[in-house]
Length: 252
Image 1 (tube, one colour):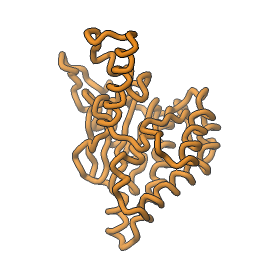
Image 2: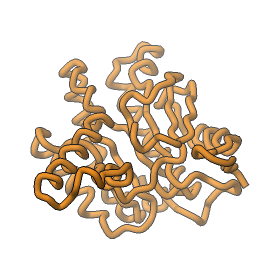
Image 3: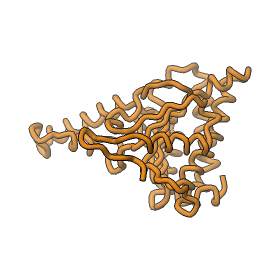
Image 4: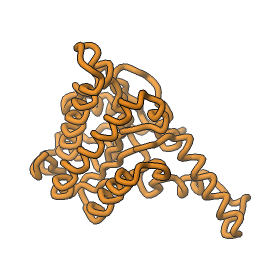
């Protein structure tokens, strides 16, 4: 990935784009199996698809892109596969972080940090610290993440405030809960894309997706590219977003 790979507004497409797009990157293993390849090759090709998607998001003009990189449930996979996934994460950060920084991309991490291998924790912190002042595309990496676990963490933080007397139980609202989530300053996703044809959220951004538009595409993640991203955005634009009230057209 080169510095020129991620350009925000200059190459933006002609249609209006959602501010925040979240992606469940699914189908690496099935992509590999369909080609008689080991599952690890699917994950490696998935990293290439991630690079393409980050580049495309910056070119299109998306402000925030959240990727579901590793779920809290993924630890139950075979140890060899988990090891390879951790190795891919290490290589991605070490190989791509400098270029992301040069391209003005800000990296944010959501998910549970406690219990991670020390070098993984350091790399995640390094990515956030190095890019903290960047003002271009925000890349949110959901790592060791589960939405139910995030909501439970928020509940514990709220309970601690109540115990300290800085918050009264009667004053807790949906806005209060939102303030105690992992990244409360980020807008909720306008669009959530899941690849591979599966049609579920799989414990991803359950709180934040209350009014998100969901687009499920049959493409396995390693084959996902700019054309697939733009097609999902065009489908999103055909939706009528009501937010519980009157119709709000997504397109121009």
